[in-house]
Image 1 (cartoon, rainbow, N blue to C red):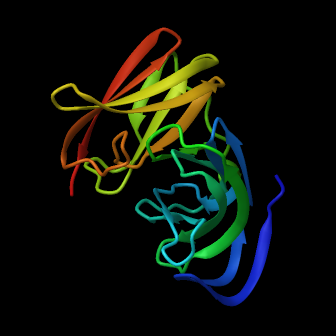
Image 2 (cartoon, rainbow, N blue to C red; image 1 turned 90 degrees about the vertical axis):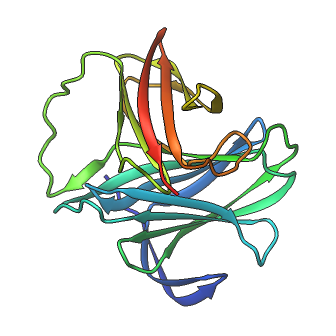
Length: 241
């Protein structure tokens, strides 16, 4: 697997300092006035526990900073590639520049790449979602064992309780159209993540702990409901603030 590297000297950009190496390839596309910012072949620890932060730059209109950090909660002795897709819905019409930053553990952020896109109309409330692939092209890692999956599965892939984001892992026994819904403890649906059609296999999705209006949800118990191929699975999550 080819590894992309971008080298920068010391450079101040906004609130970040660009130093050293960053990995992967950054690109973007717009579908139905929803922006999809891709960071492919991002180089992180195989046993990562990712945190994502997506926010407009307060100093410059039209610039969005996307920050990817491996928290180092469960480090191991191999590295591999991941593909991230950051989905931004409900942006105001205009020209945008997205800057993707990456960092591991306590390192400074480095700039992985910059991409531009145009939003022509706002159709939905502002929400953000991140999709994350499985690890691939690992260095120093053994071949994974044969998959033990036999049907539709839904599991939590991050700390529970959580304070910042929830990584939701699921397995599709066949190609299917996928939707994930978030409910509060009294059964009110607060967020729908329309993933769309996906291939058979394992997938990872990151919920940013926000509701449909883009507001942070209060602490409490929540339930994730996965629907695919006529079946459904549920997962209990605890959010702390």
